[in-house]
Length: 358
Image (cartoon, rainbow, N blue to C red; front, side, top):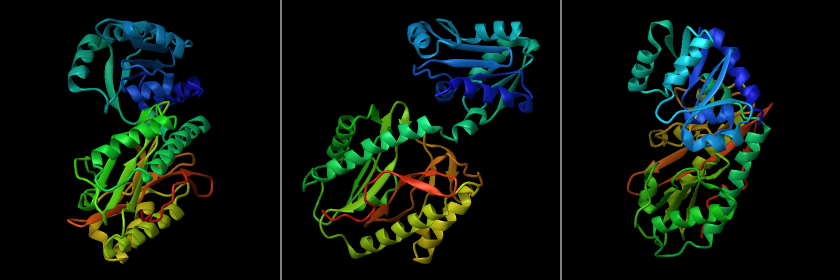
């Protein structure tokens, strides 16, 4: 990954934003621009300045990960170095990431800079770049998905009457790690029976029974990049309505996948799935947006939903995850990541989307 090109792309945007330099304090954005993987790092970047800020714990690792960037470590705060460098680089207008800096940090930085430097909040400078994944990013996402597919396949043989949701969640983590993941992209959702009616459910001690549906939302993490997949299967013979809504959700997901291409909005793709579910009489039971981007974060832009008018660019990776939820009975969600290609999209992953009956 050429982090230098990414930093140049940020600098190219600063003039339009009306700032001389940008202070990147989001750790995810700092990693995207530098390759730094530690827990404390900021980046001051402009046409006349490029300075990475951290503390003494990361002197060695930051030198290995970013030998091409000037580094400064401070034991207490990065503000002093920012003040000094803004002075030498003649920065009079400093952009900050509005969504990443607290009010307290803003106040402290403003006081430290004084009257010579004006702080200007900006939004989505780096996030907009992150929407389009390069070849290496997409390959890491595919590797994360391969570990996710392996965990899903492996758990099918371990499901038996009496196992708990919590046990299955722990097994999924072990299986992903055994398949090459660095960790989990998020805490998995494991929901048996009536618990599957909750779109987001924390696994508990509910044990598996004959006739339950099983909703599994899982994802692996590989070198900072996430995967996200949901499958709903049956343990024994499922209730007839659950089989019916699985068919509806499967059709809705395919309609949305068919609608994905560069230039469409998140609203348009969401509508393709939502109309199928509404026509089947379950419109009020689809209670969340259709999907989201995936990359260094499990949830990032672009977004797919009823109010998401952002445009999907070629190279984006987004989830397509319609669902229907019936309180007291159960629910179905089917989710896959897709890569937006020149003429449409390609599904990431190989796990069957049919309602498997174990």
